[in-house]
Image (cartoon, rainbow, N blue to C red; front, side, top):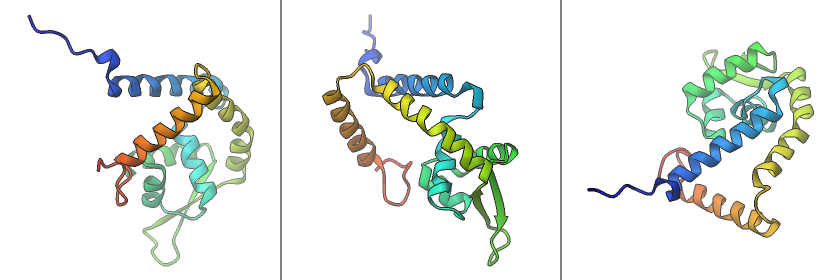
Length: 152
């Protein structure tokens, strides 16, 4: 009889579970605002670089352009993001956070910071710092300069 794979101790499984926990914490804390972690990330990326296009935004936030397109549409529907045609290339759409979107991000930021603390709460302060350093090293080690989502 074959022995089963111990998936409960596999990095992929634990990373997936950690992602589920992170999304659940975020969703619970921000349920009243009807925003996802992806939407929050994209809004912040556009705040950091107003006028970027959708492809650049997808690369910056490490999402595929198709996914970011539907997220952008939902943010537009909330009137938190607007697109405007590039004067040099009318097919290219530039993205800007609206004043309503900036206010929403400002109002959410403290809660999102608390969510990050809640995610790490089971760890001691020393272990939190080590975990974050190792997590950053793991992600950085798998990113290629050309495509942040591609394995190296």
